[in-house]
Amino acid sequence: MTAQETQQQKNTQAGFNIQPAAVKKWVNDLPLGSTGESSKQLYHALNQVNKQNNSLDHHIEFLETISPTVALLYPRLSQYFTDVALPLNTKTRNVVHVAHSLLTEILIGYQSIIKSLIAKKPFGWKKPFTLALHRTLIYTSQLFCTQHLSYQPYSKGAWRDIFWCYQQADKLKLLHKSYPNYSNNQEKTSIEYEFKRLILLSLLSANALGQKNMQEVHNLMPLWIKHSEILSKEPADKKTCFTLNLLSDVPPYLIGTRSDNTQHTLNHHYFSTFKLQQLLIGYVNKIDDDGAIKIGNNILSKATIQSLLSVWSRNHLRKEVRKTGTGFVDIITGITAIHYVLNQQDQPAYDEVSSNLPDDIIDFESTLTIEPISNIPNNDKLGLSHFLGKSDQAEDIWDKVYQNNVNTTIPEAHWTDSGIHKIFNFSKSILLDYSKDGYRLSVNAQTINSLKHNELVAVREHALAPWALAQVKWLHFSSIGDVQFGLRILTHHVLPVHIRYHANQTLSKPLPCLLGLDRKNLMLFVPTLPTNLKGKKLQLEHHEQHSHIHLKNRLLTTPAFDVYEIHEPHTKEHSTSQNINQPELANGSYNKAESNTQTELTDNIWNNF
Image 1 (cartoon, rainbow, N blue to C red):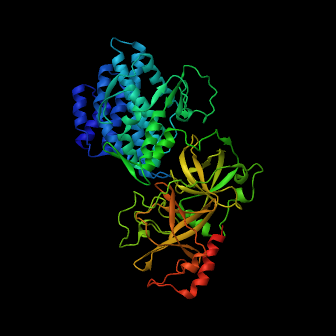
Image 2 (cartoon, helix red, strand yellow):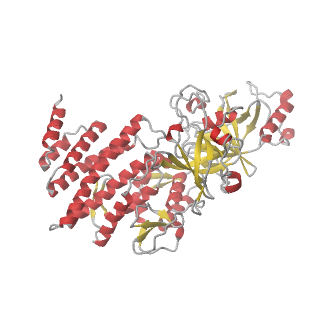
Image 3 (cartoon, rainbow, N blue to C red):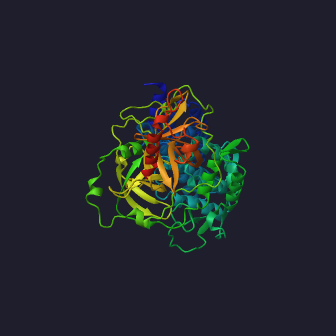
């Protein structure tokens, strides 16, 4: 047994020494080089101290002494469960458990201090009480982020506790009292600041933004908070008004997006992001195409700002309360799996869906009025900021994305691959509710191979219905353990295709992609690629048919896939530009004898729609 383990055993038997000098020495001796071991020792120390009968002053000093270390360790822990797919692997689940347990214990410590001070109200009690409220908001915010990033629902009663803390600070006029915030490397922040920060973070989809963009958002938090307000009366602008029902356990929600039967009393406050929305709109208007804007030392892309606008104000698609739905739908997750399943001629269907259709099953085509994605008015050209700078690479770019090879694992595969797939299949899901902009599904966690924010999903209402493509906008575990997720339809028509590009007078390997149709506009769904395709000659293939295509506008970009409008080849072009749709030989020349055959094959691709 090591000296460290011996000391830990003594602490367990005799109770943790909470004298300030001993605590400082213990913190200095923590093995900070090992995040796991340090987190483990902190958890056990907190667990012991919370069970001991300590003096109030020593308990507060103990918590304040370890707070800088917790602030140091949490970012290290969170990187293991940020931007991960379901199902969570063993290591991710373990790290989530450690982070959740550590934050829960330190919250129990501060909450016990709050309860003691409220009950006894000793001389000078407001100062430690205010400090405990401040710390409770900080650590609850981190706990919410942990639950959100690992797709867990909020803990029961968590929002009621937060609203109680805010009400107490408001009642005692403590909202502007400031204390050091070790996690933000700021000298001091107020209780109101931390409350606003908690609300803004709770509305974000950290998984949708990714680690890098979220860090920029965190760095600019003082700017976002400065342009947000908490009001006691409902503001005129409803698109940026979030309701705070201070007597409930309900998270902040936009007016009109949730059924709320409570009376509008003094217990209702409102969180206004009107000024924040105007600020972000101003930034967007200054950015051209796929550019970015520099704010201080931080760089925000146009896509990031648009994402912030979508969650911090009412999205144009968010118009009404969802309606209850019934029945089953089939889903396939990921471009690779969708492409594979759609290419199979005799793909079996679930008996529950294909053979025993319930009488009350929802027919999407007749009940849902979801609009597919529409063309963006500006002419965004291909040239995404997350592409590599080199237009041509020595090795084939598809090797860096994935290939449709079953039972193989591609090193450094794109996250749309979930590793080794023995077979690609589809899963049964339950329709919970729907609205004009999308719908909510529930699926057993054991049946999902991979599911993530922004994942591309194929969906159909029954075995004989056509597949549609949709985007995962949010997902989390329900209270009973199933995974619930919201989808937004992108197109009601989909065709599995491959694309290649010409480089060094040869064709690249085929990349599985999907072709969609939106109001007679052809859309190409491709995974986010590690190279720039601008200026490259692309060839579209479907079975034995192939055609040259040109990328037009970028309609949608996500960390998982991009959608482009493409030029549809017209047979009229053959007379003026005979080479445009003819097969290219290895030496770069064209076989004129195959021209007529190629024209017919090209037409057949589009006729599949």
